Image (cartoon, rainbow, N blue to C red):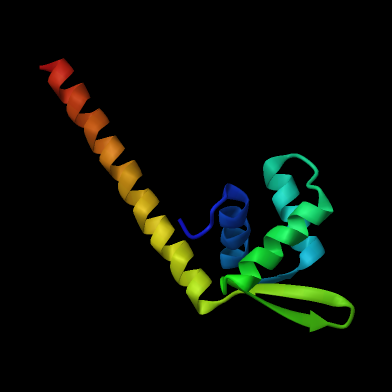
Length: 104
């Protein structure tokens, strides 16, 4: 899988929604979602891996690094969303079908 980790997936999802963010703001949003503090070195290594893989673009704005999804990264998020949505819909259909069979 292209993310290789949930953290990579979640960073891309946040950027898909936000458009672009400074690295610290991105870290803060992810920490809020996880409800825990992230090790800065680990966080920045994750960003670097996504940049190296071509999923994120980085630019410098003054003293800040700003990140955004590349077109390829956005495409991967959309593909994952479609895949996950299909899994959820299939599960819901199975549950509904099982409930109908139980009722009969």
